[in-house]
Length: 449
Image (cartoon, rainbow, N blue to C red):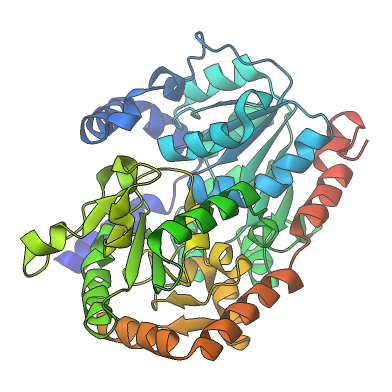
């Protein structure tokens, strides 16, 4: 019976094309509204900008003619910063959208009034048409794997060129998209150029119907991600308050589902090194809860939240765990640590970005789930810059080795930084390709003028 249902579902998906998708997305408008309503109830941060998600920018009219840049969330927004910086240096007006409140806060904290920013429309024809009509963008740039059929169709109908940059496509994503048949192929037909991270990604996009003449391998923008030196200095000050002699490790972009394993690893580390400190930087701080272990009352007294601390608060020196419940300060917290465990890798969500700690010369620990960063993971492994852990016990053992062997810790960190330096340049290559394709085709101008 279960197999029959799967077959029926597969047969229902296979014939979908753009016309069918547009009709279906219109019918699903009430479901989108209900989803956004539930999201707002669970997370108050989503209360703002609801009208923008339906293409209504009357309270913030966009200036027509900007380049529309879309980044899904915080990770993509950070990855594109070096490229966005180049666009701004060359005087291009930008309208940047992102799906999440944390992504939008990241954009606004970095760029302020130098760009227009907001939420993108849900992929329903009326919302998309309203937004694209109001913005009338010169061109549209989507980052990584943001394929939205109605958005692409609305842009193509107006003759607005589209680029997909820093594009990646895993084998699993290829198989998933292939199930939609003509829909994805039709959506990708309007792409003016596609800048893929690797040759493997380029091949998979070609299998999805993108002509080779439109595909360029430019590398990963995340290698070019600029380090905010103000945050580095802030991290150094934080480390001084914590105690320069203490061992400090950071659980970066931690998911709720792996928090118990991280807590267990830290408890084991404390048994051997009572002065050790853990800085937890949740992937979603607004809904993250630190799990209570045995002896929870005593344990809770040693868990502090960054948002509740003053500059000279002496609890930094006695705490075992610092919960970084603020947004946009990842570099600060990584700079304060000796080692970084990168989250999303002990649970099957594909792992998060290991390049930030690597760029700071920190040894990187990751779990087995790294499908989002397979190339980066291999590069770090090849240079001895990444330590694989499969659970709390291995995480604790690896941390203890790093504490005991300072030479190993320093050498692993230097190797991680060397990997970053060796693979920079994706921003410049992407810029050159867009000069020759997207914007040159649009009006004869280029990014470097």
